[in-house]
Length: 180
Image 1 (tube, rainbow, N blue to C red):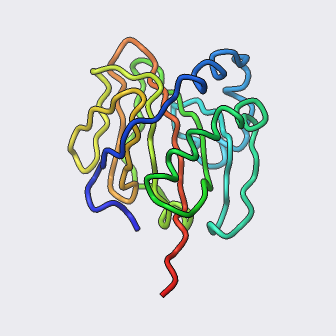
Image 2: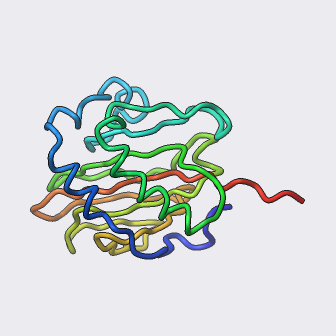
């Protein structure tokens, strides 16, 4: 199910409406699920707006998180576009992650049953050429409004060496298994 390369370009995603709606949200929305973030990624320097989260198995219920009610309508076309890259399935996790200037995400592999069987997709909303997204030591330059599948079972890290924030929509898409 995982992509067979460290990072695979999927194609363009129209993020214009999502950006407009996101820019209208209060600053506090970035911290609406602070307790959840502390539980799942306490060491991460990112701020996050969580939209959807599934714990355990992709067959478990998907929970609407703090950002869902404000951003669901604007997110729907993005979810549909991501689904078009894979076929029948559903978004099981979705978040907007902000990494500030000078911050980093240390090298790691993602863990958990849901993350092992889904496609991890990044859609940059804001980035800069000085952001380094390393997967197995290889740097990947991601462009705003493009979707990329990351093999999140490989070692990866992010270093925002730029003077601006880096914001990505991160989606875990569960592709329905094909019947034999």
